[in-house]
Image 1 (tube, helix red, strand yellow):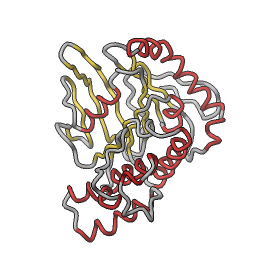
Image 2 (tube, one colour; image 1 turned 180 degrees about the vertical axis):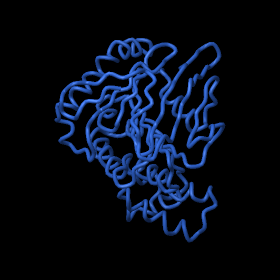
Image 3 (cartoon, rainbow, N blue to C red; image 1 turned 120 degrees about the vertical axis):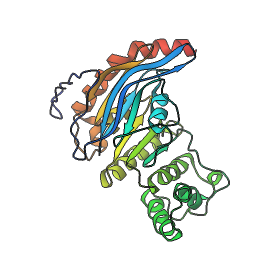
Length: 281
């Protein structure tokens, strides 16, 4: 990959199967020649991607290209028909310790309050009661929900519910965090607030993160790299080095680099998105 310094305006080119920038902690996730079929339909095929420790990789593409399916394959929830996924050198063949997923529609248990929703993963791990009592309040506070420990999901706004879902995912202290369009079900103002809240949390505790979104602007804001899926079956068309340093703020949205990368991704996807929306309609 050709890397350009932030703010130069030049959008770097990338090979379709880019190994990713060298992270200080080395590779966390390695996807090799991955493919998934549903009957006669091949969703994606030949996916090669490496995600480094302490790196955020955004995934974009038209509707139906397999973004969520790829995420679920990495989490071990969807079985690959070809290729493999490895996390820390171990091949994924089912739900994997050290991996957490945040879903589009919150995924909270309606009969559990915030405290017990956040504690759920730790209880599944059979964590000691003392550790649960220590960790759960810490992560509730981290996502800004202190004071709402006893509230149930129906008593929370959509943004607060997603904060609770994020706290639950983080409380098990994963090495890999998978985000499946986590902010798409909330209003635009709350979405922007949570984008920067998530970046703040990641900057304080950086881990490998994959972020699936339909929003190109969100993909560029969140990602160190943006993976563009295209075609039928879909494949990695291009991997773009965003080239914007952390920490990121609202001023990032005004930068020339942000505008240039966003426009480049739009140019890659515009026709595919239009065709996909026509098919859905």
